[in-house]
Image (cartoon, rainbow, N blue to C red; front, side, top):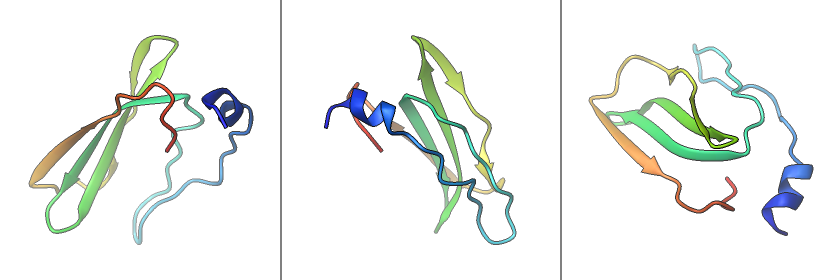
Length: 82
C-alpha cells in the first residue's frame, strides 16, 4: 500500500494521555518531520513538527515538564508511515 492509499484511510482513534495527564490530539497530519522526546528514566513529554503543504507546523509539548534529556528524531522518508 503506498502513502496515498494510507492518506485516504486515515482515522483518528481518540485523544490519548497518561495517568493524571490530559488527553491530546494533534489531528490528522500527513507528514511528521521531527519528533522531540524529553525523558529521564521514562518519557516525560513529546513534541512533534509536521509538514503542512511544505511549511513547518509545530504542536505544543504533550506531557510533563520533566525530561533531563531531549532527543530529536528526524523522519527522513517522505512515504514513512507511523
